[in-house]
Length: 220
Ligand code: CO
Image 1 (spheres, rainbow, N blue to C red):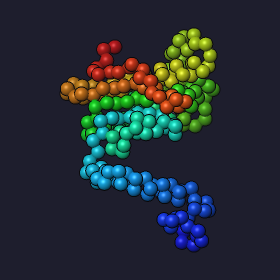
Image 2: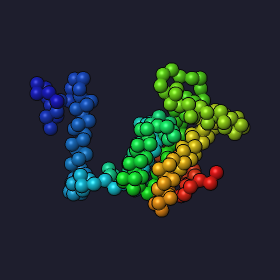
Image 3: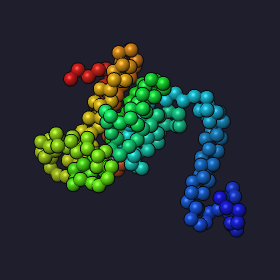
Image 4: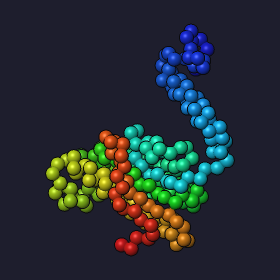
């Protein structure tokens, strides 16, 4: 926002110069908050009191897969963790902290592991190694591709292999979540907690349930 702009927006923000896109975001934020409030005057007040989401979303950072929006929910309804390739690595303190807070404090009832077809992180794991930290991060997907090579090689083309690896990655992460001590402890304590594996299609906006639902300790 600048005071020397000679043609500011109605709300006083400058619509010109290098900061214009950011100013536009703030303008959009105000308009959005006004729309939410006019539709439901108590909306934000309720959220300041507490969050009690039923869902924990573990998804990809891809900008085309916004968690809350694609299941048509509101702020307050989905606790979200996103990273490249929607991974749930057994040794990742970031994801594990989100899982712990979601399960133990927020008492979410569903963990949604959500991959998406066309995932760049998954595709990278089918291609030559990258430079930098992303290569280490994607190692679990590269290992999964190696372990699944018989199934993948039997598919007709690279597109099919990529899509299938996106699904296999979700299934692997569902198993990872189900195998964590804190999820097993929640089940042992009688908590109602279900892990789901979904794959989202950017091209259609539709989610496919991979029928990988886990409601209790895995036996193998
Ligand atoms: Co992705």
